[in-house]
Length: 200
Image (cartoon, rainbow, N blue to C red):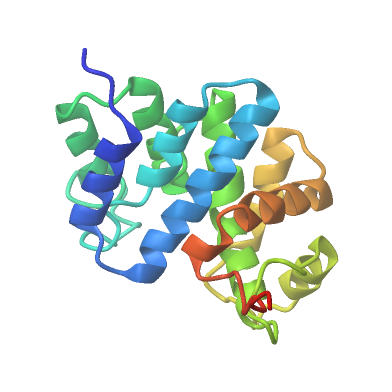
């Protein structure tokens, strides 16, 4: 079996996703997955693939309530991944991040992908409403405060954020801080670096 690389995943993701915000979401999740893989002593490349590809079919097949419909997210995408020879562990993690498929999250990679998906969106939204539109001074307590405001980032499922941290066995505040730091490392690619003063 030919091992799939990050370049392969990037090419596939960008071929199916034109939306800059959705591409940035997948880049954010990739960065967090890689950071958690390092933290847990897991395979960073494998975890990175799961993060970068978890929503690659969402733009064209966005009906998440289709459940068993193989033409909708994430089943449409996972069929492509299977045909292209991506690792089964990556494919299963992507399937199990969709709660509506009712698949048990078994591996640590499965649980981590679910735990960081919605939270990365909340962190992005919290950074974008800051005056500097930057992750660099965003704190976990600010994200927690925004989380309590149901009108803020309505699309983010708060239950998934809370349950994801619990499934992963990490304290929610610690988890939020970890996610912020992981995203900060790729802030320019996410459009969340703010305005950096030019050294004179």
